[in-house]
Amino acid sequence: MNDIARMGALAPQDQADESMSAFWMPFTANRQFKAQPRLLARAEGMHYYTPEGRAILDGTAGLWCVNAGHCRKPIIEAIRHAASELDYAPSFQMGHPSAFELSRRLIELAGPPFAQVFYTNSGSEAVDSALKIALGYHRVRGEAQRTRIIGRERGYHGVGFGGMSVGGIAANRKAFSGALLPAVDHLPHTHNLEHNAFSRGQPAWGAHLADELERILALHDPSTVAAVIVEPVAGSTGVLVPPVGYLERLREITSRHGILLIFDEVITAFGRIGKPFGFQKLGVAPDLMTVAKGINSATVPMGAVFARKGIYEAFMNGPQNSIEFFHGYTYSAHPLACASALAALDIYRDEGLFERAGDLAGYWEDALHALRGSRHVIDIRNIGLMGAVELAPRPGAPGARAFGAHIKAFFEHDLMIRFTGDIIAMSPPLIVEKSQIDQIVERLERVLQAID
Ligand SMILES: Cc1ncc(COP(=O)(O)O)c(C=O)c1O
Image 1 (tube, rainbow, N blue to C red):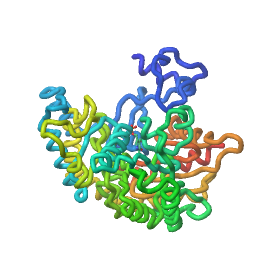
Image 2 (image 1 turned 180 degrees about the vertical axis):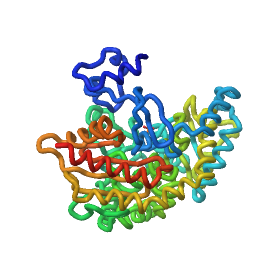
Image 3 (image 1 turned 120 degrees about the horizontal axis):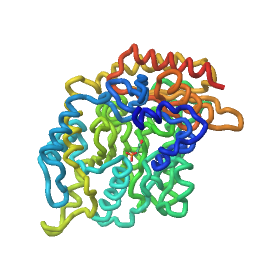
Image 4 (image 1 turned 120 degrees about the vertical axis):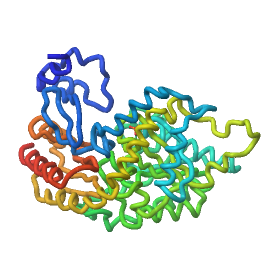
């Protein structure tokens, strides 16, 4: 038995496995995990496989990211080819063809108003890059006083100091509260069980919450505000779908005050809600858009910022040989990431996966909402191929119930689901079959019956 198989075979156990101690796992209850490891050894299509060979149905596309399904041959081949042809090329003062080709393809896919793409290696870096682009944009236009950024409660924008500051998840912020960006404020979140429980798609109630932006702007003086950043559908906090009319109001208010609107589409881009990008489905175009994850079906770390026409041009002044924007990463537009993204875009197009997500959205919605009335369930919400089932918290132990569901689903029902607080979130790969949607929901129902 090799080491990995041995670790898997140990679960569940009481004592942490010492051979695992060297890996400080991110966003993980390390001691709990190492006492009860949940190991994934390989993957294919809609499934992960444990070291012992158990097939786990992937109800979450990894971390909302494996949109084309696992281990797709054309992507593997593209990475293999790129690695043997051009292992690495700098994007500082140099370039390579696939970066330019990918940018053309992405801009074509997004359509107006977008005109340029800036590459990063993650969603967090995409967010911090977008914030820097927003600040730089106002400065080069002579509005350097615009330094304030408005985020939203319960927003998740990654873990860089910028993203963490504009984000609104208290647990992610509290240990660093003295070091957050100073000029930040937050809109209220839009979650309200009293008005919106069991909404299908966009809830009817809540557009007025966007008007809070006017209040915040009046407090700070709108001419000091650089940008407003929101996830069009808040994902990591547990799938909060924007109320009807809400994003339209944010757009109207930001435009009126010369403030950039940033959509963080790290989850919603690349088909998740039934169009290539979430903004296309929701009908409101931002000025900047951050993406990552599905850009190459998560095969090589990559993120990007899309800029609407006019933003890049504003930077293009001064002497020809001057660097216009002092920002970038060693691995911006890495050749392997670009190759995998081009291959993923081909799969998305050739298999019609974005349209497929849109076509399956109704089936997904009906299947999820069939859990209404199941044990512990106090809300179900959905859009495209993402959805959440919110559970009543166990008295005195918030988060314990959904965590228990996650463990039981993995060990006893061969199902991968995500949990945040007492919310179970799901977002299957876009290749999911109707029969697999049924399986996800049936297994989840059995889990809910079984947990305390
Ligand atoms: C909306 C959003 N922004 C940013 C991020 C951070 O991305 P990464 O983990 O690639 O840094 C995430 C990750 O889930 C996200 O959902």
